[in-house]
Amino acid sequence: MKSRLVALEEGKGPSPITIIKTNQARVLPLIILQYLMTFLGVGIVFSILSMFMIRYLGVQNVVPVAQSVVHPCYGDQSSLESWIRPPSTMMHTMNDTELFWRASFVPRIEEYPFERTPKIAFMFLTRGPLPMAPLWERFFKGNEGFYSIYIHSLPNYQANFSPSSVFYRRQIPSQVAEWGKMSMCDAERRLLANGLLDISNEWFVLLSEACIPLHNFSTIYRYMSRSQYSFMGSVDERGPYGRGRYNANMAPEINITEWRKGSQWFEINRKLATDVVDDKIFYPKFEKYCRPACYVDEHYFPTMLSIQSPRLLANRSLTWVDWSRGGAHPATFGKADIKEQLFKRFFDGKTCTYNNENSSVCYLFARKFAPSALEPLLENASKVFGF
Ligand SMILES: *[C@@H]1O[C@H](CO)[C@@H](O)[C@H](O)[C@H]1NC(C)=O
Ligand SMILES: *[C@@H]1O[C@H](CO)[C@@H](O)[C@H](O)[C@H]1NC(C)=O
Ligand SMILES: *[C@@H]1O[C@H](CO)[C@@H](O)[C@H](O)[C@H]1NC(C)=O
Ligand SMILES: *[C@@H]1O[C@H](CO)[C@@H](O)[C@H](O)[C@H]1NC(C)=O
Ligand SMILES: *[C@@H]1O[C@H](CO)[C@@H](O)[C@H](O)[C@H]1NC(C)=O
Ligand SMILES: *[C@@H]1O[C@H](CO)[C@@H](O)[C@H](O)[C@H]1NC(C)=O
Image (cartoon, rainbow, N blue to C red; front, side, top):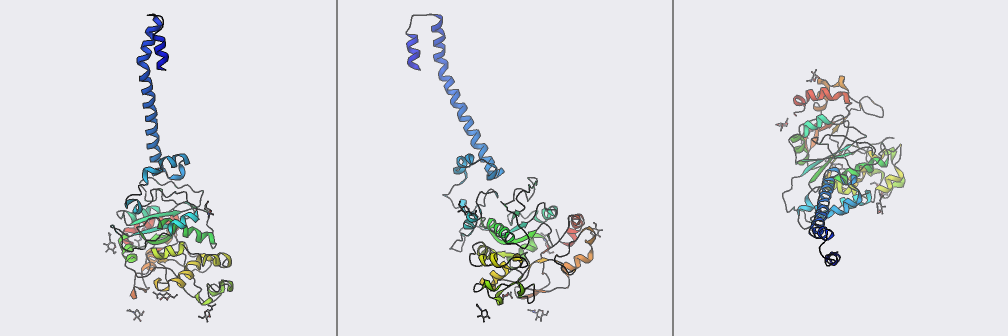
């Protein structure tokens, strides 16, 4: 380009054309510079934008190109920090095989070389909305750093919590889960696996959209953190709904005397959560031989953990539920049921063992509550539940 300009200038002496050309010679580097600056600017804006998208919008909302561009920005693998920081987004792109493999990592040196505050992972297994969310918001308030929240809902459900909500962007990649089928246990394992990705999660509690907390956060945290046992309901029940659901094809891995039944709503520690996620022994047996009328979500985890780690189990659930009306489903409580006498049933007249001692605090959560129960529960929460 320069040589062309020089050639033109060496031409036929001064003329109007030459004047224009000399002007061009001065202006052109400036234009090139402007172009370069524009490119640089666009580049910087794009990088900042994609960094923002990765962090705040979740990986799945970003096109694959942006992912590969941005990857080096947040993965500083040279510091310990990168191994202990929880994932910045719940919406990863791992499938179950990849997720479970990643979640099964366990450090062999038991002492953590950093200040670790053990957290409770609250795992909500839901269909769609969380009608009790305002009650939970109040429960969690002021306890940041001591809990994590994970929500598994129907895959096509779009949650719209505000950015100030504790439930904001806590949805994990989900699949359809059907009651009584293996897809339900898959969903529970998916919740556990996502929770295991955060090294600080120590206790994992499964809840539904119809569950409420019965105590304030500090009471629940103390109860779980000081327990020597995990709270998995597990009984050897005779009769058609217990041992009657056992299939002899499950032997030799599972003997009829080892067959257990328990409520789906459990609380387990990090070790047991890892055991559930990496199980390859019992899963195929249950998948193949425990189908309705064998309801796998009532048997798989209680049986498996009772065989592997019986001494770590309290064999009872922390979630209060009312089966007294009979039938296949427990009672649901609506607005009219939220009365003194119901509160009495949560707290009074029952004793259980806690760390091998008698205790009157047996339940930390209760179910099932209809959306109409929210308002009276909120009104009574500070007096009855202490939050
Ligand atoms: C996940 O992806 C890997 C690699 O593509 C594949 O081998 C595996 O079967 C997938 N797992 C599931 C559950 O789809
Ligand atoms: C939680 O409840 C317990 C027992 O009811 C009470 O002693 C404690 O002060 C409460 N904690 C907070 C932070 O409100
Ligand atoms: C099942 O348990 C019973 C009683 O503990 C025992 O006699 C039997 O050998 C066991 N069967 C298998 C297949 O392990
Ligand atoms: C729970 O049941 C198992 C047998 O399945 C037993 O070994 C264990 O001691 C029980 N746990 C408690 C706390 O009693
Ligand atoms: C717990 O209570 C039962 C009666 O309900 C009693 O027999 C037992 O000795 C008590 N255990 C302890 C450790 O206090
Ligand atoms: C709970 O709140 C309702 C108002 O929604 C009130 O009428 C009722 O007395 C309260 N119950 C208790 C036990 O405080």
